[in-house]
Image (spheres, rainbow, N blue to C red):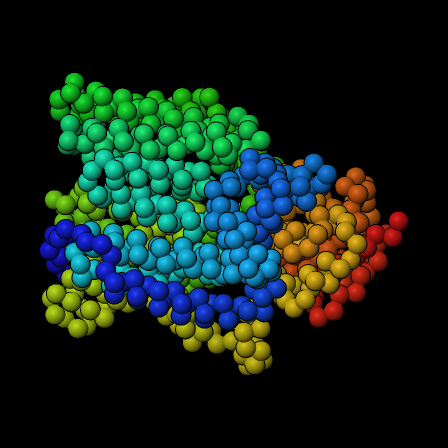
Length: 594
């Protein structure tokens, strides 16, 4: 394929793109929502983090302070500090508060948890189309919109109920990319604001933020005085909004030992980076060659990194540096998105997760080769895709940013194939740019090579339900919620659901700042029956909860054959507890006798 002609001036997003995006979001939302209607109607959300997010939003609406991110029903009575900011809670909380007087609290929450992710998907699709039009011209908008709706696994962030912060991060990075592709000081300011929002939401996108700042700095090094004002405004937006966040949303748990969210380390890094960008802009007249500017910029950037690491050594060990070594091995190592794409045990699953990301990387190379002179236009998006691809080698979460951002590049293949008038090439371009291709084709090949037993096929979708999904089915949590309130000792799989769906409290839950309580939870379940009783008494636990399949990731029956978890797996009862009858669910709940 040859490269498309240079993009013409970009107009406002076309009506046809908006209509297509709205239609696709409606169709996808209905299909996703109906597929999970049983749980969504009971406000049981797709992921444990979504349930905890709903609990955080409810607590905030209920009067918890803006800057108090503590989850008080986890590790009671003091609670456990969370690393999530309030920024992602703003729209859902505002939606619930607005709709409650009209529809009542239940419907207000239901509309919000269904509508908020779909709203972000709609915005993301239009942003992808706008970026594609900047790259390839007006004809790229429609292909980009369609491919964005098919951009698995990125689309999994936008399904109804996914109210966690990752979808908003995708949108923030897209805004920053589009702004950096657009000339002018206003666009540079918008880019800085979007980057500040992304860092405030969470540090998962810190590598992409660094890459985009690097692109802006390289652009300044090459163009000199023409970009100095843009660099100044980028710095102003970046540090200005961060200071606003510091004054209004700085969490009460503000420690130099943390480097996992909006912390002294990240705030200091943003201010220092912004100061360096402003200094470079001021020094532009004195730096007469691109190599001088590049050398000074790289030196000051390296100095900032050194200063931050020296002042905040916790950043050298990453966000999980303070997690107990045992939990890093037994818990963190089994979080799917925190591990390399090559850690996937099923080949087709690896292809489905990384396929679109790989296609995006190929598209980066193709764009670089065929449109090298237009590098200021495609460099921001290419930087994000390449960095996301590198992250995927160590953490699967890289694909969730990289897949949606690959779409505008891949839309260029469709535009080029259409212009060349080759029908087979057009079909190939569409298939290569559609993320669902890498999901559907490999899974069908795997089922053809390894057909499931007839008995499994007879069960239909239920055969592929995880134990966690089974334990969250029906009116399980309504039954639990009718019991007297108390503290529950529960494995991480169920703890967030219990907090989000009932009035119970839990000792451990799958959040790295809750280290001491998580360690006690593991000690209790992995010790022989009766040995962990002092732990239960210390936490004043009233209940023990267990879902068949808990601790299966560490092969508990083999690694801890004499443990309480193994006894519970085989239907036993914890010493000193009696089973509470729950109907229509495999979830088991035990009440303390004394």
